[in-house]
Image (cartoon, rainbow, N blue to C red; front, side, top):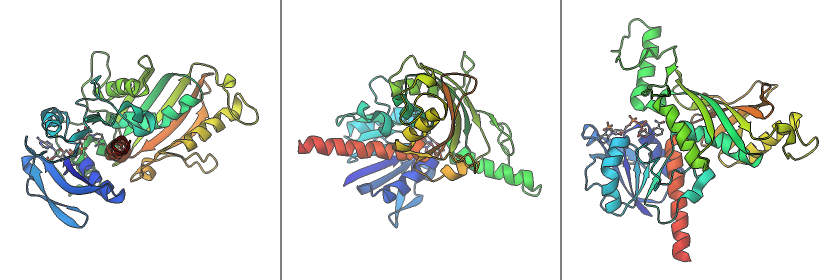
Length: 355
Ligand code: NAP
């Protein structure tokens, strides 16, 4: 059993940690819930008991063994050193340390080997990168991936609890002129609209979210040269990100070693993609052409698996296939991935101590 802290316990991701610890029977002996001064004294329920939220401070991590950080990059930069000095292992959901060469950036199903029993700080990748790579990484067994082109359909929950509330309020206002919530001006209208991801644009014309997906994906796959083009869009969906993905291989699909009859090309490659994805941990294939039933954010919401479907050859390119994926980014894109990292570390550490 372990002493655990959540920094950002009152947030959209924080709430998922509480549920996951219970569902997965994560071995929590004591739980410290941390947030800003604003939430100090608020009470959250864990295992049927109320736990008071405390304002985070430099001494909040004394006695803590696993600290889950989910309160933004500046809080991670400020408090991770205190937590590590106090002896805790920090699993960080923010972008603060992801591209630090000394910090493993981990999706356990894909590159769990990037961390070791000694890792004291492990970063959780960007949520859009996780949904993308859960769908794409298994395809490496079919051939060398040269290039990925992806467009995202990102939900409000990716922007935290406040953005979800904003979508609900604006939708109510749009439907009912008698309810008018104050409209903050930092975003385009959200109800019945969609807009380019609300992060700053760099000198290449890419926003911060797009740039994170490109660079984090290369680091996770260990493919620094991988070509990725991406467009990130927010859509008026409350929860779960979706992505339209095209994967270009280094060799024509017709030459790929696929199993079964008709090896090489045609339907066989699509079957091979389905097989590889259905064997991949954390992925569920939803690819019912006759029923026109494919991944949706609503179906992905609350699910641990990333849903993948619309599997088809790209008719415009001899080496490419296209997919559509939906994944709950509060779960696999954040809290679940973090808990899985902790579970792996616990396993590694008990193997070391038994050895
Ligand atoms: P959120 O709903 O806005 O929650 C933010 C949390 O951070 C709240 O608990 C908030 O506490 C706390 N916080 C904010 N400022 C603080 C401060 N100065 N000191 C201490 N605590 C502070 O955001 P979220 O969506 O849960 O995201 C949290 C983190 O996870 C972010 O780093 C985000 O980039 C990352 N992440 C989010 C997602 C996602 O899908 N939402 C996915 C991957 C990663 P108060 O309630 O006291 O303000």
